Length: 512
Image 1 (cartoon, rainbow, N blue to C red):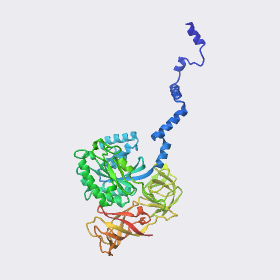
Image 2 (image 1 turned 120 degrees about the vertical axis):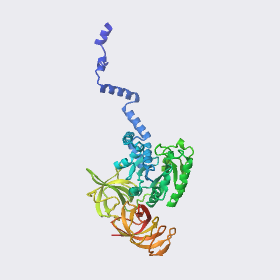
Image 3 (image 1 turned 180 degrees about the horizontal axis):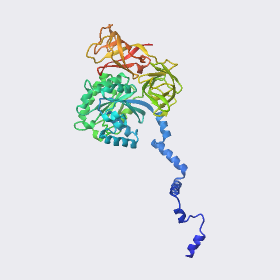
Image 4 (image 1 turned 60 degrees about the horizontal axis):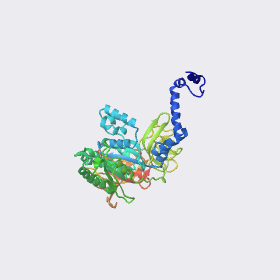
């Protein structure tokens, strides 16, 4: 007892009593525990160093990730195909697997889809944001998303497959460097898409016409075949698709055809045990051969697109927004040239002069936008009502865009039940995203489809299967360019009766 009294009255003042420890606040207790743990590691500086190293190694460091992203090449990839072939689900699942969407956000989509009784649409809802799209279960307007592969920063562009929304699909295609043609492998589904009026055929043709020269074919819903994951069904589809893409203009040897399941995720980023029979895809081309098994490997096998930075600026407007507190923002793809903040711009065909205040890509400010970049440009003193989808932006001091009075086009008539005479006025879908009714003013020449040789001067009419040189007059102002100077703005498709009647390129332009 005496010893305990001595210890109470003569204790070391540095040693805290039990009552002192008990009186510590929860915050003080946590601080003491953290300091103890930090002491074991080597102090706060050592922890910061280790954390930074870990984040760099795992790709979770924001600064390092930004550097890696800037170093990666940009690939704009459209996903096309017949309605209900599973395009949005395939893209959504791919984006989810590659970490393109936060898990918490995805769980929210899953819950909302179940509440509406559409649980199978949970991956599609990543890209289908419109209320009408979710209620009807189809894509209406094109949507984009960003993912990373080992080689590319990929901008995914989900194009609607329903023929009523083909204009929106074309707007998506004109922004793409490459495309995934999706076909459904279920019984009857593939046949519906590849039939004469199917969108598999039309989308492949339009993509080639709009300058998409690299193609991957995803044979989706391979789990829906009879029996599921059928090798025989895949081989049947592969044979028919190869024959059709060759007819359109693609080299079938350079097209990877990959069996996948967008819903279950088979063969998207890892080989699937359900597809043991699948030996893989192989592409042959003069730039170098490639081989692999999965869709992700097929994406990385695409060739880097060539970017024409040496030509005058051309940017096609795909959307216009009025952002509160900022003003008018025009979104679209840089086709040629370089766009920097402060550049004095001309918007055609209206001939509006403005200035690029800032440029952003995926909410990040850019010092310069290069060809292929999908950007938003904040425009000075321009009302969002003055400009629209299909307009073209150029540099005011270097070949500004101007409206075309008329143009001469070389075209191939693909599918029309009757004869086409001067005065025929269908809708032209141009490479800049404009959809304008134009009149065949003069049929100048009938040409040989293969050699381009003139067969007849001033023919009275042309019909399906003919190639012709035609003078065309737009019914509304539109900016178009010659194929020789601005290739992306010189392509067009002619649509009538809800189908593609002709495709072609512009050889000469008379500007206003």
